[in-house]
Length: 612
Image (cartoon, rainbow, N blue to C red; front, side, top):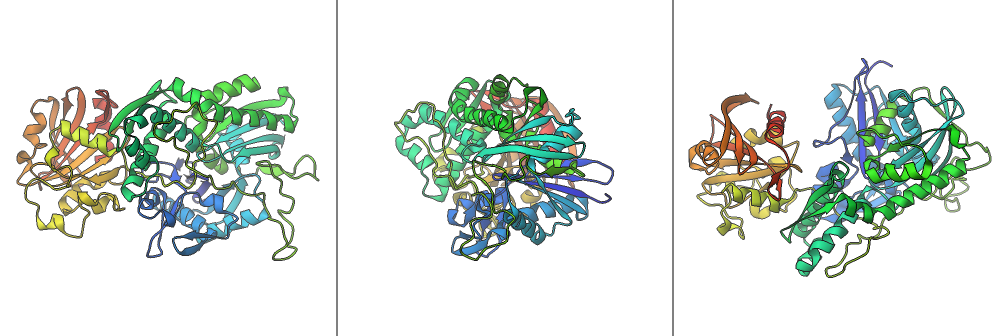
C-alpha cells in the first residue's frame, strides 16, 4: 500500500506507535523523549484534555481530574473527571489524537492506513468503542488486530523465525499494567488461530516498581517515619510530586537491574540515598513473576499443543526483559525464550507486518475464547433489551486498589504482590539530587533554601506572571513556562522536549536559574546578573579547579558562544554560553557514591544531541 502506514498499540499504562514510509523505512514515534506515551489523560478546568507525561505532571495538582488508565474504563461509558462526565470514547480519542498529531508531524502527512491493536478477548462492543475513538482522533482506514497476532507477525516476519504449519508460539506479554499470555497456532501460511489465552490484571511492571519501594522502605522508613508517611500517603501537591519522584526512580532502578547488578535509589523528602541489588529485587519480585510463569504453563496445557510443536516462546512488553523472567520460563517450559532489545515495540511494529494474516475461530466452534479467566458468550449478539443484556465483553481488568506502601517502622517479608491503584505518579526527577550537584558546583546559596529567594537583584521580568518562580515549583506548568527571560528560554529551547525541568532559587550572581534533568544527568540554565564572568558558572569559574579537556567555539540553533568540556572531582561536565546574552548552561553527570553515571564522551554526545 502506498502512503504512510501507522500502527498503534494502545496499552493499559503506555501507548506505542510505529510509522512506516512507502519505501519500507519504519520508526517508532517519540513522545517527550520516549517511544512510550503514557496512556494517561488529565482534564483541565477549561475542558481541554492533556495526555501523556503532561497529564501526569498536572495530576499532582488535582488527582480527581486524572485518569491514568483509560483502557481499564472501556466498559464504563462515562468517566468522572472532576465534576465532568467524560465519555470513555473521548478519553481514548485524546490519547490517539496525540499519536495522530505526532505521526503527521514526523511523516509530513496523515497516514493512509492505521492498524490499531487490542486484547484478543475483546468482543464487538469494546472493539466498536476503540473504532469510534480512532474516528474521533482523525485516524484513517483503521484496521483492528489482536495483539498476539501482531506479536506472531513480528516473530515470523521481522525476526524471520520459522513456525511450520501446525506449530505454535507462546506469546508472553508482560506489560506495564497487566500480564497476558496466548498460544497462537499457525494453520496455514497466512492463517493463525489463538488456541488459548489468559491474563493477570494485578501483575505488571508497575507492581514490580512497588517491589523496589518495599526495599526502600526497609532501608529508610525508620529513619524518618513522619517523612516516609508524607511520601507514601501524600496530601499536598508537593508531597504527591515527591511520591512520583520515588516511583520514577524505582522504575529506573528496575530497568537498570536488567543490565547491572546494583541500582541507586534517591529518596525525596528524606534526602537519603540507598541502593538495591539484583539479588534483592529478584527475591522480592519472584512471587509475582512465578504467577506469570504458572499461568503460562497452565495456558499452554489448555492449548494441548505437543512439546515438539512449540516453535518458540516470545517475550513481549517492557517487564519481560527482567532476566529472571527468561530464566524461570526456560526452566518451566524447557524452551529458551526469545527476547529482543525493545520488547515494548513488538506489538506495534508487528502490526505493520501482519497484512494478510487472519485469526481463525477457536478449535471448538462452540467454545468461547477464555481470557483473564472469563468468557465472552454474548460478544457479537444483538442486544436483548436495554437493561437485561449481560455485558458484551468479559469484565475488564478492575481498578487496582491501593497503593500498598509499607508504613514506617514496618519490615515486611517479600510480598506476594502489591496492587497499585489510581495512584498519582509524578514525573519530575530527583530534585534533591539536583540541589546536591549544584551545591558541589557552588551554584546554590544554602542560606536562601527555605524561601526560594534569589541572591542578587531580580529584574522585573523575573517577577512577572509570565513565568513560574521557584517557590511555585509544584504548580503544574510546562517546561517552557518556567523561564522568565526570553533569551534564556531561547538558549535552553532544544533541551525542553527531552527532559523535566524545575526552577531553582538561591543561585548567587544570577537573575534566573532553571534545572532540567533526565535519569543520568542534569543541566542548569542560568541568566547571569551582570555578565558571564560574574556568575559562579561563568567561563573563568567553569575552568577554575577543573580538569579542562577542551575550550572551543560552537554554533547551534542560531546561537554561538564558547563550549568548555572537562571534569571536576572526577565528574564530567559540559559548559557553554552565548555571545549575544549572559545565558549559560552547565551539563553534569549525576553520581552515586561519587561515581558518575555517564563518562565524558557520553556526556558530550548527550550535549550534541540536545543542542544541535
